[in-house]
Length: 68
Image 1: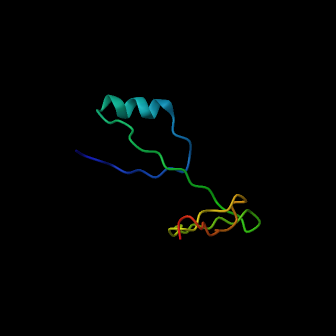
Image 2: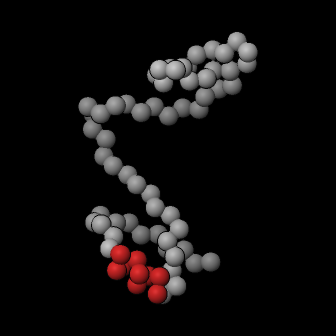
């Protein structure tokens, strides 16, 4: 299996995708990214420990007495 990773700064044309397919390549992955401004919502990524589900407001963790 041969794989090639390419970075893009412009839109990918359907013509380019068709040409790559003609050469035997197939698209297997797309990854999106965007800039985050300081004014935008903060996104915190942390693993949720056992017994602490995410609260309904989605802002914090809360204890679940059935799991502790």
